[in-house]
Image (cartoon, rainbow, N blue to C red; front, side, top):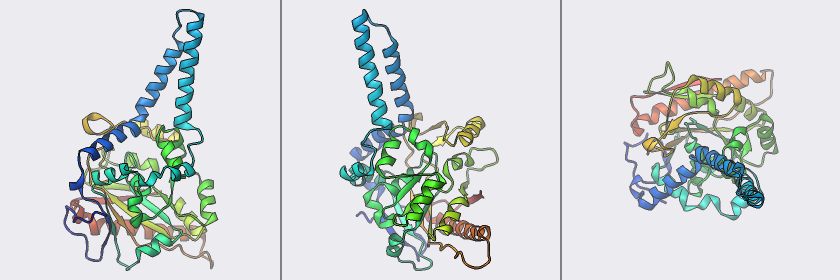
Length: 358
């Protein structure tokens, strides 16, 4: 595994490098794989609806005669049905298929890891052994979301980063099922729907680790260029709901802050889209990357893994809300402290972190 030194100053001395990929190893074929996959996956928001509309128009166009018209309708109708089956349904949307095709070990992910110069650092103030973190049935909380959740995806997908995060089931918004191509990948990973019932069931079973992004899609609209924000400030939302579930199920929460995750795309600030996104619980955002295309800007991603936060016990006379507030304070403080300790090493010494509680 690559172990080249970081291109930035060293992290605090008590830190420990878990996984590191050098940006200098990023070659032509890696670039080709990253950009083509980004166009295919992120760009599917554009090309899939376009392809479906094009097929529909072809299907509606009358033929030269009755037989020709019938053949066209059958042909284009079958193509539309096939696209819908491949992208949104079918037996291939199954975690067993993901294991069979060895999804996590694809060389594509290593190209992405080199593209972002992936680096995972254990912020080991309490001298916690990473092995114990990986063995526990805990909750991995990745912050922040970013316009497109590259940081979360690269924490869940590649086999090469298991030394940092292990294997976990990602928790994704219900609306992801409507996102062509992405819905296929999350299904192959065995993703959990973000509904309280689904997540609660997985936690109650107690035999699987889960990973989530506490801020969700709402976090996309809290960053610059929103009115009242500043480019030298980073923003993340910490919700109390997942902490409440952690307490109820006795699960430790591992705070993970990813530097750079908010800089891989840029967006246009349109308040109406923000209102519709929160109303429909789906991300409706006009964003762009390199050359105005769905190609991410090259940005180093540095993950800081904090010490696990143990949930307060459910004994005694202290009510649940008080325990949730206590854990929320611990989690928020941990994020803030990690950001402050490592921001100079990342090159963000001039920035500050704003935590929004919800």
